[in-house]
Length: 322
Image 1: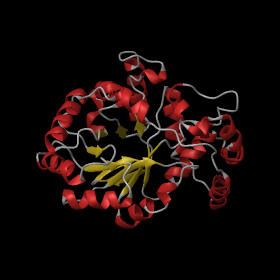
Image 2: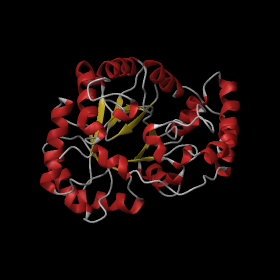
Image 3: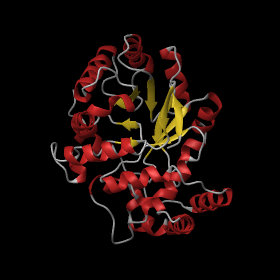
Image 4: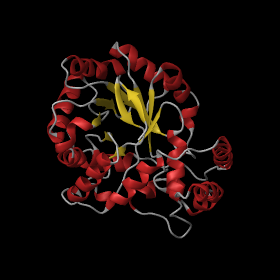
């Protein structure tokens, strides 16, 4: 497995996003999923995956608890990232949130502690004061941000008085906004983009079509409307052509495209051991310049229809961590 450096640590370019662990959105309850998660995590470690990402709000804290239990025998091999929710922006709230996350993870240190979203009402300096305390106390290894603009990322660094080595953002073949500012900055300054939703919530796998859309939280995503499932077809066809040449799946080619970008780590989720095996194998696929260009040409032609749908209803369901 290829690696990349985050805050002085070598981590795998393909990680494992754990938001689905314990989530009812996957048809699991708060307990069911722990057995499956343990098998997924153990196989991930065997395959050389070392980056594991979670957050206090995922499944109301159950994701952290399940991930921590699954990693209990593999802590030395794992780089664990978690996040504090923006409703905990004040210094004492940040400290309390970290204590809660550490307890659920059953760890004495979080390798990368990220601000999940910028708070639109309060200055980032208030949150970074708490992060600075955690950093100085050795409770966290580094401070990251998530869903921050380039200006917000720079202000976070200034407030912390230290490098903020990563920004976790949505990045995939059809959602390429980070290429306008964030990714060039990361590449120039030795920072890292952590790409969540690298498969566009499974859309780029080719499993969905008009009349066969996913349910659950993905109903909030306009990409899964019948019109957009039709419009994305040329992108899926391009992925399919490249996949055939590599004896791979569309999902693997989509992941390979993401992690071929310098300074990028992808954190796809996995609901099965088979999925994590397929994700890990994507790190070894080398796309030619012609293949990458064909994929990017198809992606540029894709224009989703319809209004953006808010993620806040889903977020409110998760806000059970106080």
